[in-house]
Amino acid sequence: MNSIGVEQAAPGRSGRRERSSRVMRLRGWTARHPVTAFLTLAFAIAYPVMSLPVLAAHGVIADGWMPAVPGVGAERIASVLLVFVALVPAALWTTWATDGPAGVRVLVGRMFRWRIGSGWWLVILAGLPTLTVALALLSGDTFKRVDVAPFVIGQVVGLLVNLVLINLWEETAWSGVVQTRLERRHGLVRAALLTAVPFALVHLPLQLIGDFSLASLTGALVALLVICVLVRLMIGVYLRGTGGSILAVAVGHSVFNRSNNDEGVVAGLIEGDGRKLAGLVAVLLLTAVIAIVSGRRS
Image 1 (cartoon, rainbow, N blue to C red):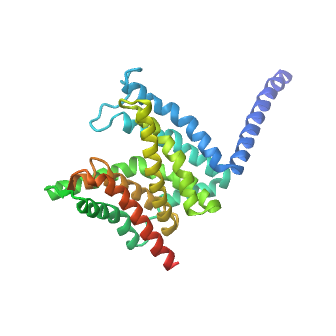
Image 2 (spheres, rainbow, N blue to C red; image 1 turned 120 degrees about the vertical axis):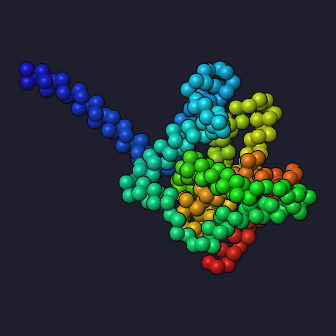
Image 3 (cartoon, rainbow, N blue to C red; image 1 turned 90 degrees about the vertical axis):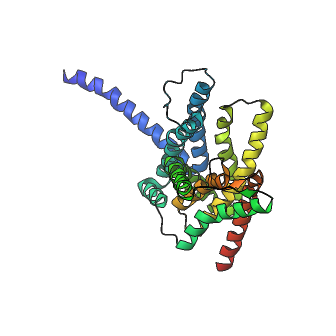
């Protein structure tokens, strides 16, 4: 009986050693090529899982598994799947493989680093919407009449929902892992440009949810690349100025969204189409001014 037990246990130990060896080889490759490893893992998971709400939106598969909640459509579900099923696991694996458990603790600490100075918080929270509104008014747009209290409450709730549900986790991956590591090697501007390309591509499936064509997808990709370059440059400046605070850049990302989408603060205050171009110009101007001021102080 003992000899049989030994013979049966040996293959099990051999299998565990083989699996452990594969994990160690994968960890070694990740440690040598962290950004490549992150992108490979993230995209390998992201596109398949994001295809589910896309297919459901077009009736190819049943949509009964999606929550029937007002305001939670296929685009929001695809974004949540992207963040929690693809980006966060890829970020944690890459950080653990490269820097060990201590590196993961540092990454998590950066997610909640809020002590960056009141001046930075003022710039991040108010700078972009204020500048966008000013530029939109200069372009000929006009103010809307709003009920102040409901408007403010709605905007704050919308920002917090986006921050907690998506942007904090999204920036943990893109800012905390990809852009931070690229900046160490290539500097702020090149790191932002390099990060902008996969950042745009991973959002491309969202363009498939509604009606689309090859021409519309091409136009959407070009627009995404332009917007993402501006956003990643702004976030790069935020990252450097706040000592790498992921929380700060995630709030900045949420403020950008609320300054440019149709349910955001600028759309709620301004009547006209000038705000759309004003939002992009505002990002460029704000980033340039902060970079110049921060550079002089340094």
